[in-house]
Image (cartoon, rainbow, N blue to C red; front, side, top):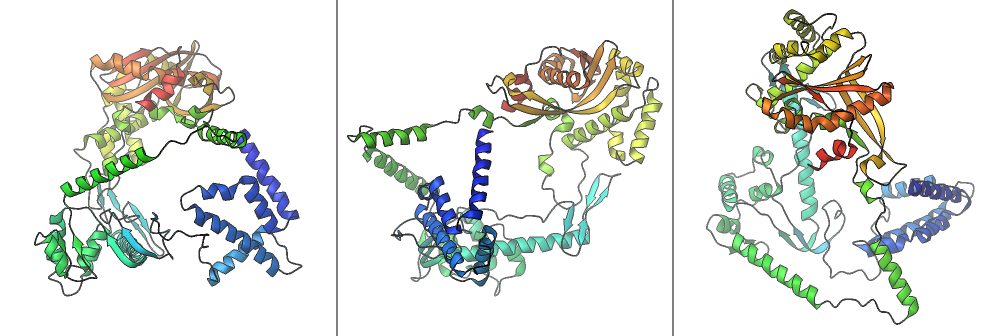
Length: 548
């Protein structure tokens, strides 16, 4: 908080100074007060960064000399001045640093290299897969159309439509066009020599070259079929004799002229090269003598100690930086439920018709979601029987809350069995007061996590499946759809106890009613298990699962 307050105070001071001081003077005072020039000089490519900042200051002086006497020389006006220079492409080349080191190796992304030129360029990792963004998913949009996939809830199928396919193809082409522009920029940065490297199976290169050698012109489908930049290069150079000698004839090196050559290195050669580089690094480290902290000049010694203290400084509240500001207790509590496990395999599903039948994880997801919906909407005016449960399921299907396939996965007998337990009986007796799927948000002090930060807190959110206010206090029930055996009930109860105790803490804090009992109801094998909720270990409830 103090750091944020200091930053806001500094910004307000600079905002006031911008109305009183010339822009160039304000910019230079910011440089001096923040030691910005020294800071950027210590960063990679520091000379270039420092030169750019000095050039920005020169532009501020230029702006003040160009501006009309009656015109406001504000920061916004200076920004507009820079934008106008950028639009007109007037002298907007990067600043040249003093004693610019031409004989140096610079590592940068392709985007940062735009507009620059180097004697030698090494373009590495051409085998990395190109990004294919926004070309899949159930809903695709372009400037004029909206493409949706059709869903058949009865059969659990997802079918693509012609418009969906068309928009997906357009987005795929646009994505590949951008990748081709990136490759063009990268390959045109070299002035004297361009070195392209990639790591892939030689047989894969041979297959693509042999296929493309038969074409007089490059077919469009070959370009669209590419998965990496190397595929494009192999397709374009398929007619090259040097490439054919290395990939098909088995030669390690082939250079038929001075302009183009191809080299192939096997795994053994690469390992030997890596060992050589590693040994050279070790020898270099041994040859560097350690800097002595003993300085003859007292002033230098004091400066040296200040630098060492700054480098060794550690943030006193480092533990808070690793602590999330908000926890979802529902996610922690249900992380072992079958219905809550994410379907990561389906995130990038094929647009072809897909049937979830036979997928146990998808079936568990649907069954758990459907079961909780039935518990939430089941009328409690009387003890529910099979007819009432079926009627509730039918209403949920008709309203679109459940699909027909999900409704068929519900185990009705496990739901009926709950209302034959003491907790189910309490729910019927207090039907007008029960809370179902009750969301809560509560702030808890960080000090309860064992951290010495009395003024800080964490926000905890969750959803209680069933909360029953009684004359003796609150009764909490959490439904579990895990398919487990009776011999695992004790271990699962011990795992869920911290989270259920946290539920009780939140409920009694918000409702101002003490919590008297807590239960876990395992639908399989239909067991109501009491849980100790009076003891809450906040560290175990929030951090044990995060660490495991």
